[in-house]
Length: 306
Image (spheres, rainbow, N blue to C red):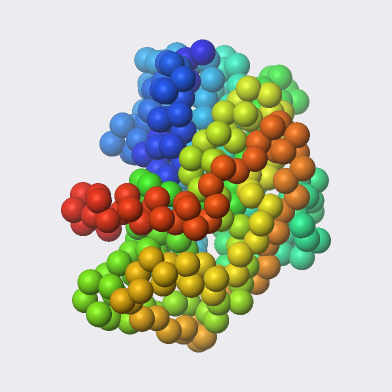
């Protein structure tokens, strides 16, 4: 197996690269657009030809978080559509044996019954707060299915919940909830400021630590076919997440900004399919947050560009 990983510099990509290399796999890690501009098909195809992968993990994407979803809808849709299309087509041309692609839980219809079941992923419109990011990911799933029907493309598709861990994008404006809050709490703890948090804490999310996600992705490559919820199956209220972070940064104060949007209030997932592959998370939320905060604090000087 010659494994190419797009998005290898991201939170789950870094964990997956470490896991595969520790097991002795031949890995080509594309960490960022500096390694390859996946929005350009010629650049993408050139990279595939040079490395000639037999298997591909497609984890790369243009992610902006809740704030960015509202501000940059066209950029989100265009960039993700280009990236996904180029990677899938290059994989076909190089006769890649299998693709494991990263989707998102945001692809689920806003009114889908809980817990979310993979069979419902395309059965209705998504939540407006993540509409265009979800649309680009839905298009990738449909592309993979069309390629399976016409070319016999072998794929597994992960509907990813909220992932967090080392190497995350700790951007307080356009990052996801865990890394953005870690950045805010760390700063507030240092300068005695107050953390402002969107909403009232009532929204619920499923949080999966990156090392656990990497183990699940390896299982998908080895024996997964079709669509899988990549989640723990345990929902946590944002106010409880904030409580965990406050325990890690006790000197930081926080307040809720109820004028800001909450996003979708509830998200819970049926994880039967991925459990049938033998996957079970190893880290609790408390353990994962502690490890993430430790990594962030140690590497803060390298993250000044955020």
